[in-house]
Amino acid sequence: MMKKVKGIAYSDIKAELLADPEIHALYMAEKKEEELEELLFKMRNNAGLNSTQVAKRMGITQPAISKVVYPML
Image (cartoon, rainbow, N blue to C red; front, side):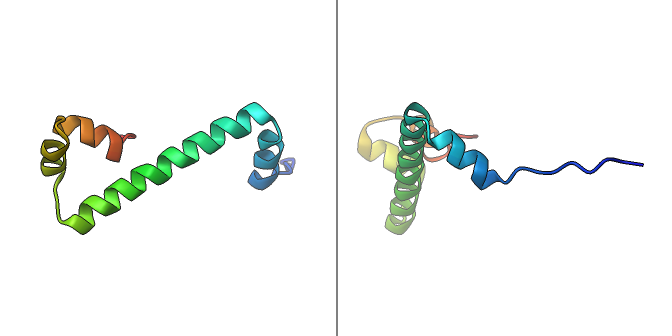
């Protein structure tokens, strides 16, 4: 017979961790970065530009743009 394991809600863990001021600050910084990445991606698409065109206008390389827009790849 298998024992049942009581799960812990993600929201409870998150709330507990975010109660720590240092973790909260890191979380907020990461959240802001993700929001900026999303905004840049939307702006680029709305302007009808590809990443190479954006890079050229900014005076940087296309791979640098990709690191900002797609940091997890």
